[in-house]
Image 1 (cartoon, rainbow, N blue to C red):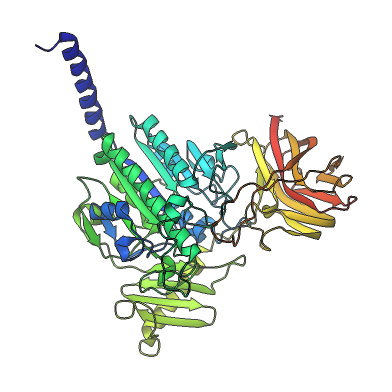
Image 2: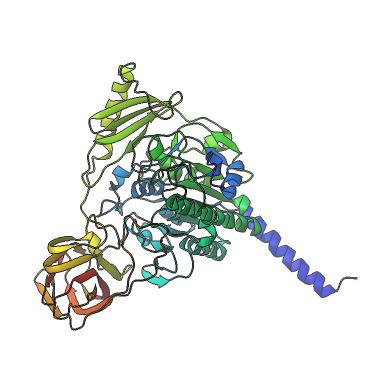
Amino acid sequence: MMNRRIISVLTVYLFAVTSFVFAQENRPPNVILILTDDQGWGDFSHTGNEYLSTPQFDQMASESAVLNRFYVSPVCAPTRASVLTGRYHLRTGVSFVTRGRENMRSEEVTIAEAFKTAGYMTGCFGKWHNGAHYPENPQGQGFDTFLGFTSGHWSNYFDTELEYNGEMIPTEGYITDVLTDATLDFIEKNKDKPFFAFVPFNAPHTPYQVPDKYYDMYKDIDFGYGEKQNKKIATIYGMCKNVDDNLGRIRQYLKESDLEENTILLFLTDNGPQGERYNGPWRGGKASIHEGGSLVPCTIQWKGKIPTDKKQALTAHIDLMPTLLGLTGIEKPKAVEFDGVDLSDYLLENKTPASRKLYTHMTGFEITADRGAVREGDFRYTKEYDETGLYNLKDDPSQKHDLQSQLPEKAKEMKEAFEAWYTDVTSAGFSDLRIPMGYKESPRVVLAVHESSGEGDLKFKANKNGWAHDWYLINGDATIQWPIEVQTTSTFKLSLKYAGEAVKGDIIEIKFGDQVIKKKIKKNFIPTALPTPDRVMREQEAKEQTWGMLDLGKVQLQKGEASTCILKVYKKGKGVLEVKEIITRLEKTL
């Protein structure tokens, strides 16, 4: 006969398991939204890539609703803004990828804020890219927990520092594995409550770094682009394979934790592929206004609720927020006007949504209507400066045959629709970058040089555009200026990240309004290059190195008093001064 104590323990265990399962079935579903970076339509075996095996995604697709005609924006930050708000990115203040053009207005109501208001725990793990400073950062936009980076670029994917709720912390391992670990830890801690996990992996975006295990799978393959060994594609496919393995880890955890049937799991990518590689029949890749720039895979799994099916209606990133609110039963925020539609009935009951037009826009630092597209039915109308085109994607998926002369009225209709749409979505205007200081919620604010304007004898280290994490090389007198906005009268402690072999004696002058701080660099700092295990020479990001810290003292700023922080360098030393950023830390508000 079984020992009574054992029977008692088993009874308690079974009761606990039964109670957990019952609780899961009688609460709103959890949501996990995975978004990858620069992974194109063709970067999956599911879409016919003969070189790349993605069994986890393929298995998920076989158990999900697959949105076969799903569209995003051609570049990173705009897609993220639309995913987070259900609105076209131009409405949210986002137009490009850097220098403040990636910042989403804090007034926008995000999906995280809607879930948080409904009692969900919210976490974001990965690349944010919609604002580096509170209240435009993840904490200001509804996330309880954030691990990752807020910029569009990161310099190193191994054993790197990442931002954790406003502070930098060291991590160990490959970045996609680290972000998955953090996601699973968040789920484990919050599995007794409804949770929303946004997982914007930064892979396979540059720099080209991946563990040997994954690179070795592809390093000797001839991909057919004139090189028997294409290290770039081999690295990208290795990164995609690693992402797929981490998707498998998340799916397996949900199964083992009895969370699978009460969790909605989504997987999509943020734009077309960067660089030439397999992308099906579609024309263009990242930053292109053609089909290959914005058509991406999207799968939505909810075991036992959403039927497995391949959906052919036109759908887009703007549909995700209204759809997830509909699936979870959360009321739409009253002040929000979605551009997207709720696809719940389409997913659950196969009620086809009404026909509509979807719009694509691409720009640079100057916001114009020069580049864009309209997708309706089988047609795609494109505008690229003075060149326009009309294509039937059903008959001509590669967009080789312009139909404007055959269908002039259709072309005219879609041209006018794009122009009217652009006027509408840009009507609220755009704001130049302002860096807020003085929020208690964000005591540490970094004035990074890629968010500055510079004059004098200086240039960026790695890229003339000054992408995130780049720095200035200063050979002579120079001025660096940041636009700031002091929210509360406060005292701040300041320090400067600098380096240089013969910069002793250089004078640093910091000016906030009428307040001036002058400091002399009293010692050189010879930087040490940190390991950057690139498979291919990097194209955009500066490499990581060590930095010296110069204490600049303290400054008291009145609310609204100073609108700029000006750093002047008076060169006295013979070497090149390297300047990365000013770190400000809120000490007290007055």
